[in-house]
Length: 373
Length: 227
Image (tube, rainbow over all chains, first blue to last red; front, side, top):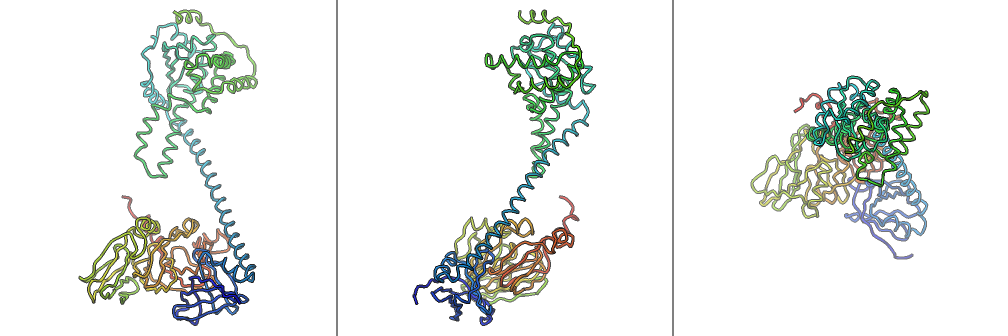
């Protein structure tokens, strides 16, 4: 018999105690467990009779019952299971392992449900996001065109138009004529297209919601033909007819509104919408919108009898130019991945029935000469 | 220190008869009346124990107040009356070395032999049962006073026992508490109006309340006018 023993703080259940329960000092010796209450009542359970279980509010409490269940000792201290294992010299190892396995089982079940819960939340979030986008798109389609025009007229104020060429200038006339060729084939009717040509070396063009089209002379100079210019203009007109500006604002606002609905903050919504209307329209459309505008532009060109390949050719030319004069190519920065876009236009052309295309009868040479001077 | 439960069970208050030097820690706002010779000190600490701001914050998470009020009798023969916020009963529980896990707002008062701490009862209890994630853990040796919404009853659990969520007041630390479904099938449990319930296992004392505050809230909430 060794006199090695370890003491722990715990408690004991027994009908012999008043109230059935008392705090106790639990000692483990080489024979078994001994609990001693403050009233100096002693309760003993030899290792041979010990039935172990784990539980309690923390889930870490070890219970030890004798064979007729008249005495239950319990202890929550950390070193308790280890001391039981060591001092019982293996007699309780099997039971200790069993309760440990039971605990792991519970942990696994918990982890399983935690994972299921997280995945479900994620899926709900993704579905919610796309449902929100679909809803805003549908809502935008139902709005009158006058809203596009209002946004466009706000947005144009932040565009620097001081170098704008007058309506009588050959370049303005040329772009106007191209717009007139394409207009009958636009996706929605009732848009009032207005052309502004700005005399700046920037290779850029954009359309604002409502149909205001801004073309920089830098882009006209870089284009190899009136048909190539028509390709770019068709693309920009498509942004306006597909109402990408409004959809973009609606989407951003919708997401912000949804977030604010959840967080309960409504105050900033108004300020944000004004800011978005001025900034996001002018900066860039999403990749998806660009692809849509490419295909819609190609369709408009095809309908108008102009070869959509001209649009692809213009992208190709820009791709070659890239690197030579990077800061001039603002149009590229908002219109990335031209290789993909060229391929997409070519794919589109394979799908549609072939038809003879015409050349535009426009004073291309004259415009180029005028702009060169 | 002697105590007496007044006006049981519908609107119980507790009257303490304090001798000089007796101390009592109470929930903020619990005091109803007191005699002249009692001083009140408000801190975020448990008397004599550790604590401070973190303990105070933890208490807030469990639905208790950040601050605690400590009442000390400076003269003999003092009387202090306290009462809980909700309409209902109060009980006295004598702790002798073990711990009691108390549902957020049910702790009313305890004497200086009891430490008040917060204990984590897991995500599942909070998300699925409407119970709090944190509970108040009272441990040590001394007198503990708990309140309920409605009347209070105690059960000596040995084995398994099921209580609907929202009806738990407190339970001894020797009891394990899990969330489970009331019936065999989950859908049936919800259709039966029981939803998820709290299942206790092990051995120990459990206090339950006859009514539950969330149900009252659900009943009244929709009828209130928005501000």
